[in-house]
Image (cartoon, rainbow, N blue to C red):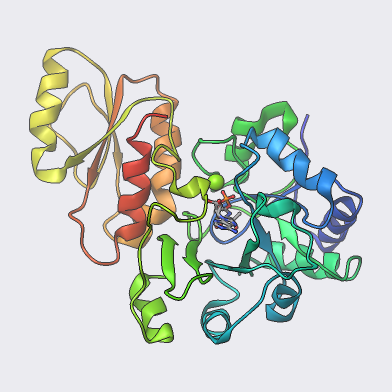
Length: 327
Ligand code: TXA
Ligand code: MG
């Protein structure tokens, strides 16, 4: 049975040793739980791909303790420095050119690298302990879920998803942010937003002093940008809050049990309702938990009454739209 460990100083030190020996460790971060391995060891990185069932060409984010560690892996220009200084430690991943001599096991065959300094004390504590054992000190860590499934935002989600395959797991409670980091690609002349997250587009643009481009068809491979990523087993439908009750009336007539994640209780006796929070940060924090909870009910459908697309809601809209696309 997998071990769920309290984040004591001894546990953090032990985790660093396991990683240094080529093992895997599940760590809490402020966004979601990550499945970590030493990014400089090919076999350790391969073990992440094998456990997740993730296709080989999909690059992983390398986590570091600070900007100087990041610079051992990636080439930081003025834009990258400015963003790291403004938002690290925090939920922002920078895609930059890889240092030619840096190991490329985590990069899916690309000459770019995704780097992030997480703001969670457990992730940072393990990174710091690991830095004392390994001077490169980079931890490859994708979300600790099977490929294509919903990211885990608490230790229990990891066990539910990885089961007996769960490696050493440090329990850091519920993740504060709840959706994956914002990803900005700085490898081209024009910076681009590859994945919306808690660090908002306008905050990034204010630091860069220029607008961000979006995803284009030649964007680097990013599994978080596949249409059907973040998918529960039950089909998900995103509906407008104003049309929710009409939609539910149809399912009620057909006597189909459906789940609803909505701000207000719907007028539908057969619906399993989970109350959605009011603000966008609340949605970010709870959306994956809600999808998992409703998915476990054995329903024919999950309806999400998403708020109208207003600024600040990009990350929520992005994740619920992807959950609604069948893989
Ligand atoms: O919040 C997060 O970013 C979490 C926590 C654990 O830090 N990690 C995470 O990792 O979401 P993952 O592997 O599930 O998503 C990483 C995304 C993927 O879509 C990956 O393809 C993209 O980052 N990525 C990594 N390196 C890249 C690169 N060189 N070029 C383009 N995309 C890259
Ligand atoms: Mg993921």
